[in-house]
Length: 614
Ligand code: AGP
Picture (cartoon, rainbow, N blue to C red):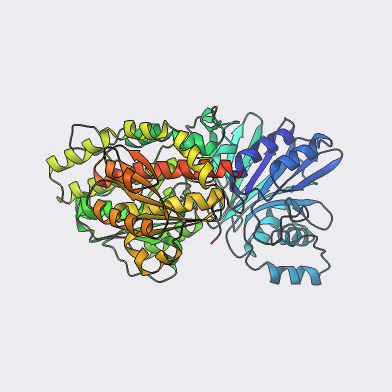
């Protein structure tokens, strides 16, 4: 899950590559590098370990000039975060240079063979075999395109690759094998930009092509050709994107994560827009091209996802069952596809992935399709791989999410699941017209309620002052708020590096209660509804053992304040929608603790925004 970029045109390549890499850095930031070709003086390669800013400051004193180049920002899989392992990687002569995303699964065998034939490797990466393979094939007198395709056919695993050659200083090649990562080709005026995703393309052009699995592009600024992996040339018509580049700026907030937390009242309106008309009993989901009979025949729903999206799936499981009456289970996508699940044409599989590019989730979708299930996806990227695999895509329209920790796409995913569940319920007759109208009305006040929660920060700053040095946190929830306990714990651990665990509160007596002492804060979600009394009992159990309680409670529930050490109130809402509210204080708590600890909130260590390896 690295970011890759290429440029060929009439402008200086270096600033374009660096700007593009800054937009792709969310995909990995262990090291970065560029190679720039200047027709007359050859190719200059610059690399640095660590974040992109190290490369940028190196280049300031040693600017590589030229009109063609490739760049890479790395999330390490094979080999440490050293400058040597940073991309681009070259062949023995430095003629071929390559940036790569994915894993060459048979790299050891290929490397042994190339070593025997006299090739010398300078890095510990799997990627370095690619330029050497191309070099070896080029010796048999073929074109760069032919050699690259022949090399690609020998690679096992999913890959996205961009190739340049010193001998062809206007030409870039890019290819995609499998689902490890996309390649977008953007056409400007006398220039072509190639990148892992649209964020790096949009500043230049909205006219693009997406490479599909098994396709290669070969391009100069004025001439673009497409090939299949077998070398057959074909035509591909470009499409025009709609995307607002201004919205990716931080907009006055200290971090993208904070900006994205504050965007939630707006982004949930965006998800609703055109789909729900308040006061009516109608949901418009034109993006789901399934007829009433197909939907009525579904006897089971399986939701697949990873990480935060998996927590949305767990919430969705409750929503599907309660609003459509269809039995539903949420499954970790990676586990699901590795256990030969029993599903058939009467199973509706819903994948949730903000990026639509998570390999485990894509593979789970493929498993479902191979078993004849109907597959829908919920994602925040309109032209993602997930959306292309699925029979229907509910596009979240949350706007780009740059912070590695998901926030607004989580709330929007839960909202999309609520809408989809109600839609299924109405289609199969589980919900009457009147019931549907009521369910939709419950959504109406949600943006305003979210806005009230995001507006204050004082109490979180105070909590961060008290608890930022704590080593462990527990999060407890029940029912539809149990997944929010998991999500609260995930948010805290990923951005503050504090160990945190979420539990269904009923579970604590079965073991975790042994952890409770005066040093452990316990975040308890104790909102009004059928779980409240049981949660109050859990709070007593923790307090009796000296634990500190941070309670998330419903406004007006004054009793909680007398039990808990700290109480954060959220507005009242129908129980099924409370997860969209209770998650926000937990995002803010994690954020302020991480800031107080001096952590890199938007780019936490060891993580990447999009996980394109299994
Ligand atoms: C959440 O904060 C993490 N960034 C991570 O768990 C993420 O939700 C997971 O990798 C799935 O990503 P997706 O939604 O893009 O598929």
